[in-house]
Image 1 (tube, rainbow, N blue to C red):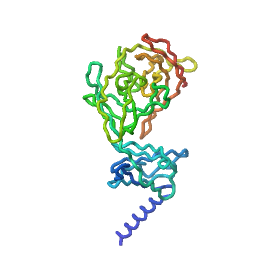
Image 2: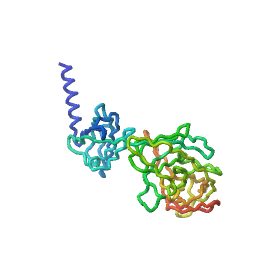
Image 3: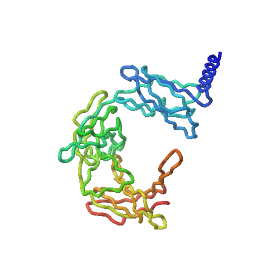
Image 4: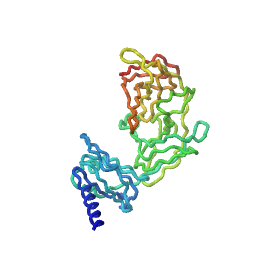
Length: 335
């Protein structure tokens, strides 16, 4: 009798959890768009896009598809973007109306969600002497929307990857189309002062250009591998740029993070410097036109978490580097 009562209570609790007010069960099935077969092990994520604050969910808003491609998630009612990742397939980013929609009621069945097999881009990256370069970030990038300006690039597609010890890379899940392939050094820590080297490697586009304007587009087709995307990372001289970060009253601000972002190349990561106690900074830069901004990192610590927020912010300052050191840069930051 006791066992019967315990079993009944557990069943009642489970039924109550499944029917909790404001919680919707989302189900669906992920299949291969070509073969119509199930895609097992795909990661399904529901990202809230509701403006109103959402109640805390019962668990993570993600799930893996089972052997027959099915998934189930309990989420608070609201509007969601459904994002699906599976190696080798093109990532679904929730841009279609059926995958960016309100979720409410007891259950929502998304039905069959089709994943398209992507293409693969393979190659190697070397330095100027032909030595393989490990640890580089390699991106396959869409051309920019402005067809008149080949210097523009769009967004990366496919998997993110780094070159291995042989300088080799492999980017999977690339949609069919024509793309730029770019390699760049992995970012340094944001709070480290820039090393003052006489030369540096710059963001390089296949087959060996510092800008997409003179790069070559690579064609990718579904299910096929584009081989032989080999190129050398461009090495260039640097010069120093120095200045000071001050507040509106002209008083120096210490420990500010100064960012130099190269104009005309959205893919290039900013080069960072940290202001000293007197607000001054010095950084080594290759030639180019930069936008300079500053903010101050503030560490927030609680009993269970540690996070960083950024104080202030500044209007950008335009700086041109043309083979000679630049001094006297003044960045005004709000406290």
